[in-house]
Length: 461
Image (tube, rainbow, N blue to C red):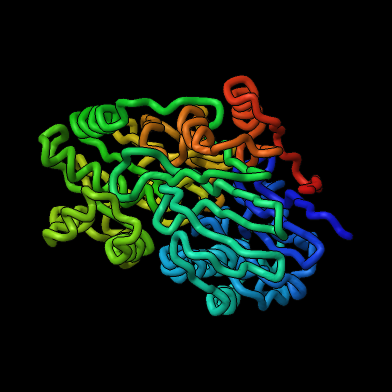
């Protein structure tokens, strides 16, 4: 009889392209279906065949809606997948915005490359289209937290709150009678605004645990650091440009900036949320109370939505975004994407990076090969829309705002298991972070653990 096995098709040795193929006597399923982002070598993998036949795959189980976990779904649908895509209601709501936006950006980037001739491919083609995204969205099947559902002929699954972004889940799979696989997804943090804390899972035979920040501890003074950067930039008369993910980071920034202004810890500068998708996502956050923590719930019950401050300037249209280029003086502009790989933030960086009065504020993980990582590492120039833009602005990082658990928080979550998993695989982390977490698990918990190898297949028993 065929044993259960697991193949790491992405999200191993890197923090992107999360895809884990689970196979057994009764079939197979895919855990996450992420897009590769970052360095060119990774991005090119999106164009490769996926390593399995999508037309014969019965199901995908998604941990959450970030593109590095869900952004390959339109390609999967284009290549013949017609099975169920299992997710939480919050993830379904986000994907209806995220996948269409991703497809639109792919189409726009290809059109721009063709118009200005800076692509090596003639013609440049989008990785996928909005039609492909719509095809994938029709396959979404939502399930509430704690609800058991038949994931595929292989067995049942349950979602537990991960506390990372709206709808994010820890996935628990029961494969056959005596094999329980748990996937942490991207694990969130305790005592953060808006979302409930991560939930502990009691048992696993095999555990996949993320390691984005597996080699470090987050700073505890993130609010103070954020206030300092904004205040110092305002005194120079400059603008703070914040590349921010539309999901999670934008909402936490809006919450925190409101709090800092209420407490008079930052000047009353103009705050612009220049992200149509971010604004749509913010509205979705407000409509899903199943994810709200008690602070968020209390304010929503009082009809005082903390994410809808009337002092914010909400920028939706392209014309409104372009009009910001002519504005002078202190301000904060929050725009996507979070690693400066695309979106409206590129236009703001292109205009404001050459001015020493301005600050680029990085508030999330910056993958290798992205403009955000280049800025973080002190690049003198960055290439935007085919031009080399000089970097004279200040570049600051506030990592305490991350929605990813750090090493201590990852260990805290793993200590919630009643018994050690038979085997733990460390995934979704750059090599240094993954190795550091594996070492900590080995030394502090005494578990059998190894770092997942990209492309490897392992037996699950």
